[in-house]
Length: 333
Image 1 (cartoon, rainbow, N blue to C red):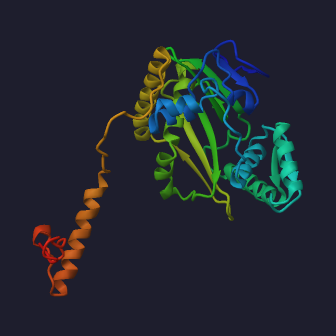
Image 2: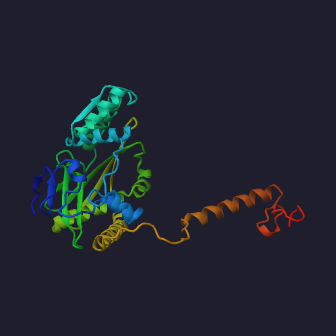
């Protein structure tokens, strides 16, 4: 299958393929049938099918109330636009904040028109982020293809399980022997290399990577096993440091299993048209594995400090002098 990107303006696409469309059309679910995206997959895994149905544009009973984007989100949206050269028109709002009525009105009008509003101070930040990314990437070996790769490419496929899947890639390189999916992540969190493993897992970015690779492998079977997923992390705060990270195979191995579970739950709920919530039963919470280790270390430290102070701790609660008072005698039972 050649890398042909079909323009798509509105409604549902006719079948599998690569498309270019607005973010609004994509997020409204452009697939021939209700489809699974990475964001819905995360909800299925981290919450419940009931939450997923509510979040899905074609399954929820009614449209949720619109919520204003935060200023960091607006910075990220505009930075993406400047980095990728794709996206809605940017509308600068000539105010320092959204407290005044005129600023609120200008912002609302921009969103209503399908544009990207941003305060002037935040536009300076977004431009600085974009300049930093575009200036930094050419200096990193292996990133040469980012600048010329097609941007904001939507892929829609019918998975081997029967489920329709959709993704929107920030940029994608498709070569004869391999492919590279690029994803830009800006924000207030650190882009330091040693912080990224936890950040990727905490935010479910591994699920996104595995689903994107699965979709592209379905469209281009000859590239299966040769598709790389790379993040470009950039900090909103100066000096807007940039780190490029590639999803490791160990992470993708587990993430592929997460995606398999999400697809299974999606197909099961779609087939039965039942989107259950949390269990209707009393559950026993599962404590994280580190909890026992952390408390054991605390006990050991407390024991040592108490012995050094000449007052060893008696961990037998029944022998504690601080037992509850007897209701009859008014003293320790």
